[in-house]
Length: 331
Image (cartoon, rainbow, N blue to C red; front, top):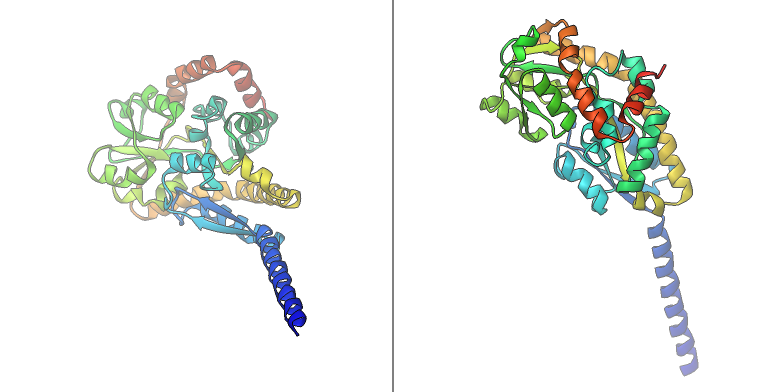
């Protein structure tokens, strides 16, 4: 009888260890990806994040679980990127303006008036020159860009009408933390004032700045038109947007999951590229319907005014002029 109880006890112990092993195996098959966005959940970028969650969870049969933190819940853009580098966040929304602070070559993609139109812009974001930048981002910063799509050619929204180059003179305008954007605003004759995205609305409200520049969709989503009533259609800069994933985390995933992430994001990026132009038109028209005055402007004097920005940044980066030439030459 004693021997029987010993056998039963051994059986229970083995069963318990086996069950625990099965739990650990199941646990290893589920990977949690926290995706952080500094943008509002009402922005077009939320569609990209939501689609990624829906498609990757389906493709991996919930082997990957995506947790979304939008509206700056985990910090501003710079803080989110730092979180991905540290591994406290697995993915985040980012743009070429901020990524240029990590790999300066990306700053050349934000040079004012470098793109002829949206077709040129979309092709440039998928060019060999940009892929080489992506490789540098992995090598130097441990971050993988999962494809770039346009944020939209940027315009100005201001409290005072700007209809000529002279209208920028002396205006204190918000700038993102991007050397190219800051230099561009200053080259136009305004005074660039770096302010985090989440503080722009109150800065307009309290007259810390008299205006700002961004894509029409972002301006509308953040309701900046409530504090400034004049849009000037400059289309001076585009920021490429991506989802960044930490390379160490990416490498830790099973090969089939890595392939699904890359493939799914390629599809989403192409779909968002096709949506961008109409989104910009709709956002501009929507603000006009809400009482904002839209001003067209002769861009030729603006293009001439910002030429020193090209010279400045081309000279500050190894092979800068050659990289610019490759971007401009994209057909």
